[in-house]
Image (cartoon, rainbow, N blue to C red; front, side, top):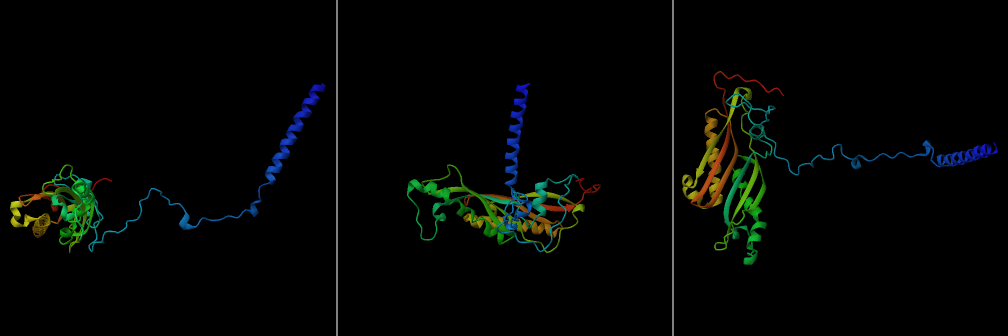
Length: 278
């Protein structure tokens, strides 16, 4: 009996000690009225979407003619045109990855020099060509902007592997640029009553003659050919836009180009449009 009394007294003393300690700890907190609430400034607040991309440094110029709200096109078979082709044709005022000009060209390394600059030693020439590949890419945009491009941005430029020729100090480069299109004077026709098709137009060195003497002159001729082809389609009542070009220039005798055009034509007889179910 005595042992039980001693045991209960010990337990009671332990509980009392813990209770007193807890009360002191609770009292150490400030009262709710003493707490100062500080709001985070708006500029310091975290964005709603931390993965959101930064704003564009330079937006593409807005076209004078509004782009259609429709994002789909009808193929000649009555189905839907692939989304990438529809975007490349319809979103003329935006940079679209699928609407680009790519070019491979052979240049003397001296063409990559700045004014007053000389070529490095022979051991460094290939590395020099690789570093200056962007200079080759800068040749793409000028002829496009002079014709049907509203904006142009080089997004790739590289030295082709094993293309450097020490005997001639030339190298081959692969460059590409995306572009926006200048607005037409008239809006597009009713897209639900037209079919979309693409055409290829090839332009070789023999087609342009002396204009293939340099890569710049040849590219300008290819751009002019694309303009003329679309103008002919427009005259026939078919809305036409340039969707891309692939150009190769190694010498005045070795020059080839393929132009891709998109155009709208009438619906075939017996074909009735039906909008997509999405």
